[in-house]
Amino acid sequence: MTSLASVTLEVADPTAADRFYSAAFGLGSQVRLRASETPTTGFRGFTMSITVSQPADVDSFIDSALKAGATTLKPASKSLWGYGGVVQAPDGTIWKIATSSKKNTGPATRKIDQLVLLLGVEDVKASKQFYVEQGLSVAKSFGGKYVEFASDDATPVKLALYKRRGLAKDVGVPEDGSGSHRIVLGGTTGAFTDPDGFAWEPAPVTSTPA
Image (cartoon, rainbow, N blue to C red):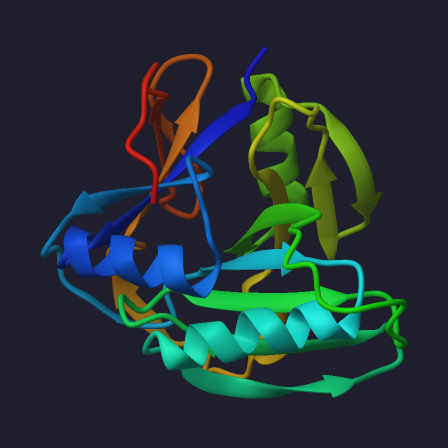
């Protein structure tokens, strides 16, 4: 059985990226960093999502991210599903911070309820089948639109699949992009590459917190 054990962002300057993620989101070992100068342009085909309990936490994380050097892709606002916004880190990674709640129940706690890695894929059904064959278990599936894989409390980041075009639209960027995804997924089994070019490798036993 395979599960997602780590996420490594490939960045030009790991020291600067570590400083950003510590200041912006207070991330620990959930996200790893690795130096890379591999060419990449446009949408990299994935987003990271931070789920929180109330709008105050969304605003707090977005404010700290902007102060640390992020840029706004979508200002925080209410929607049918809740409240959220999207920023882009200096290293190029797109982050969505959101809550299903539309009202605050107290001051911001800056508690992260869940980290989700959304992979934008061309064919959700085909990618779902590929991952099932690799040993991942499906938790939720909505036809050819969205798939979420099972995780437990020991899993730092939840994995989900979304149509690439829909994912780009959701975060407010053009879907075009080429070159490296600039992300490596750490699994509990061997190395492989999925149909959309996302690379997996055996997750390291120890990590350097981001």
